Length: 435
Figure 1: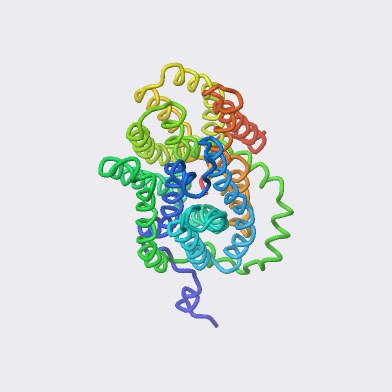
Figure 2: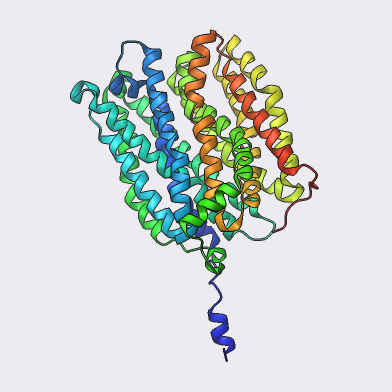
């Protein structure tokens, strides 16, 4: 007979401190977004170092293409590493993703320029981006699911919002470093070698993040599962749930496109398109990162109270109606204040929508393959829409001559989110989930 004491011992241990678990799990997200933002902010310098063609637009297109090609590895990482996390556990899987991401970051930071080693330089940068994309394919999803599984009932939107909130801290930190460099160094020195300094700082914090993540606890929900699916079973279940993966991709497109526009692409848009100073672009980015951090948990909390559906459909409708008019107003007579107002508007859309979206998608995917399905939906959205945003925006402006044309790209993403939310919640009550 099993004694009460031994029976109690079979219960999975509870998370000791949810605050510590949030910080430990999101530390890898910090590194991922820190490097992604730097790649976008220093795109001009990177393009000249690794893709020198003599034409600024062509150089930028090649740089953003490399950025996007790395993102195409995200679905692969979502499937392969997502299945690993669903089988072996959240904790061990997130340590593996961090290691892969660290290798990619170091490769880009130390890679010699095209003038030093020729065509091998862009190849090394591309390999670094492919490794980062492979890791990022499940890093975001793995952390989101981890937060979802440790959250308290009725607060899943609030808890999962800290996945994206950690990325805003990274953007703020990177922008501060960029702002300091722009004041301490000449523009030519930054373009020549100074742009590497923030990347080296990112490399320096990798060991610290490893130490933090090694102390991460496994989620009680994963430990409570009687059977963990094999990778083959995960793949079969993923195929069986293709509909929610596709709808999840459409739902996430609104998040990824808006996010990459207001963070990764904003510095290039401000400097190269609006002809504002680098300092102005950095200050806008600092404000955006701050307001993103505020809006994300607010959006999560609101969706916990009134339901995911009204938040998702309401914000997507507003974005669809205002994205192009806002940019059209900005480009007529660009200024720091006008750019700030437009970017803060988009920041509110992103934060409120994403705060609800992560919890919404986590609730829809099957529990036994939650990481794989969530990660694949997010990775497809990031690869096909989000990280394609800088390239799409540059191409649209170049081929239409309309500096507000990226607004059409933003509108398309909003329409995608609106349609997906409608299809997912069709016929359901808007009442909040209390799981």
